[in-house]
Length: 609
Image 1: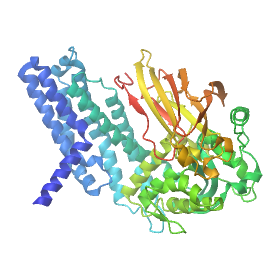
Image 2 (image 1 turned 90 degrees about the horizontal axis):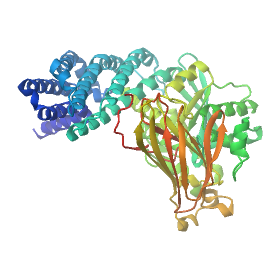
Image 3 (image 1 turned 180 degrees about the vertical axis):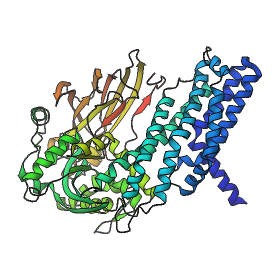
Image 4 (image 1 turned 120 degrees about the vertical axis):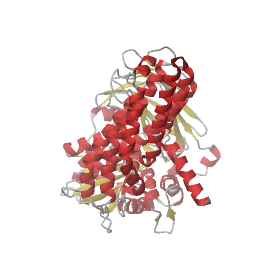
């Protein structure tokens, strides 16, 4: 009996954790009954009915939170007709004459409208999104996704693409509508709506990642023809705008779902073959200004904030080399140790040739800091190659629906944090990759605004492991023209203390004696597409900001020098395009860990209204 009670308790907890937005309907309704009691027993009776229908739907939909669970999907599929009935009834009642009148009343009107919108979203998800996901996942679960020799069976993914894409589009549409509902004024109602919003957006984020990965994987893995990509390994401990200094480059081929990884060549073998043909703007900003002049050879190709420019530069150098001149490439992958660490967390630990075991928790620190302190330079790239070969090589082996979903989530989250980026030279293929968010680029969407902050280390060192960057975004106003205004605070802090810094090898602290233990950062700030940056203020040892233009986009550029225990602060106002429909996000140079993201404060107004 104890086991049964625990199992039932766990199911209840899981259900309420995943669907608090449905639970929110219940809480909202009860609050509205109290506030709007003037409508008497009829309103109270209808509110109870909506509550009951919502509760019933919530209980039956618990499986939607984990579409990789075969039992949950089967159960959800069998109950779909009943769920549709419950959500349809809740929506119908909540949009009845009495509720429509209540929605126009002062004080409680917005809260009623929010309840109506929540029932609409729930019903839309059940009818338009859930069936597609159920059908697609059921097909994937009944298929053999792995051939057992490290090869991914692509046909089931191709078969599921259409269902998942359309189901995800329907879900994202309902999420957008949900996010645009009026913010409730009653405390309890507001709390429930906020909790519901967070939960719904979490589910939508996972399904969106799966959908995007499903769209790019077949072609990426050579479903129609073999593909050849260059894997460019970045060390974010020596920051460049798109990630970090390029330490080595490997060749990866994919053919009908099978991945093969060739040897990595260190950057020293590429240096004799020149630079990646920088533009005049890139020459001026990265070579002619600042204490460290970029060479634009393979080491510095990630200095460009746009992956497209890094890829073009890599292709130019590749074609000059004896080993690359006769071997066309289809694209490039930019990866860093944080991405590899996430893969290891899914695929299992990696054992290095010296016996050291790397896990889903210690890989990034080893490759970004420990290896530079404990191993000679000539061994450092070898260890990266060992880790990359094992983790990427097994990325799609022993595949099932659960691992496919985990891999999709990692690819999406790592791409959004610039720990992983890819670019294809075929315009049609690149359009799909870019549309899925896997090609890092400077702010380009007016509808989904972001502010870009990109950092390049000017001290030849591995000091960026110690430079921590945090950001806070506070909404100031939602403007009449549809734009939003925010204030951004961006802080760079040198977490190294002077005592520890004195014991670091020069390879880590800096080869220039006068700059050792210093983080000297070239900081580029981009406004959102169609927006602007104003009132830029700086604290700390920071040069006056330069107004520059980089490949057609206006930027603010400055240099910040940060000694051990010191920090530099940038604060500025950001106004988005009037076309914006989502909150402002931050796009930045990645650090040596998965960043928690922007802290958004004062998100009190509905976006897209």
